[in-house]
Length: 367
Image (cartoon, rainbow, N blue to C red):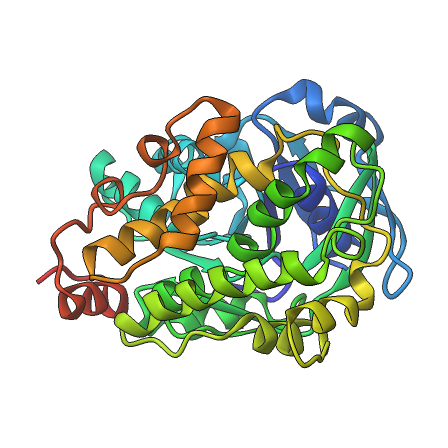
């Protein structure tokens, strides 16, 4: 891919608008796709997005194309940045499949847990003849919030974000394609590693559930990562974190702890999670969700915690803490998140041995 060819951003939520505006202000030609045109009509009318970013480029990010036509969005781009809730990855894969080329590099921002495996499984089921490269970032590079229909704010950019592709042997190819705009991306090993280093699984759903009384009483009018992280809440997060790391260890991965991740992503240090999270200045000013009907539950439970639990069950690791968070979410939303989530069955990896699963993510080939 040429260094400054058009980049397509798929999704015009908080993250998609932030990434599209930021890339445009960095000098690249950008196409923005959103499935519902009404959501991007103001952006289309103005042909761009206003970005406030105290630590980086700010101003009006002019876009080359704003569209709800997937074929048009992908036509003149080689690098495709998918910035939608992970509950939408399956639908985006199905919509994009007819238009994907061999030279396309598709990166999920982020994949949550199992995102790239799910995306590739959809393409396999649709029987596409091309061979696009699919990968994922371990976490979203920005802490950002929408300020209006075509206005977005970036609070902080992470200093280092692991990325991996399926197959893992092509990860460097994706890193080379994106490094001129985001040199912060580094080789994340493989998509099992990026998926199990998904810190949103630990920091989002449990924190929302343990603060649900306050969220509903105050409509989210408190600082989520500051006021919401008390010593006792942090202890629960540490239990979930240990279970996630143990599932990774069972798969032969050296999964980072929450403390290690905060140091890597934000250079935030502490003796425990409570101290480290309170030392992360980028969290200051971020309000809590206004409702429990929020992606921290509706996305993170089925797309992050369910696949971790399912992998644990397949490979003999107890995830009682994670399971309790999933169960509480099922109660408050009166739904079965295990059925809706990314289980090993849904990902097409049920019954694979650890060696077979590792071979698949490294080479893209099934034994």
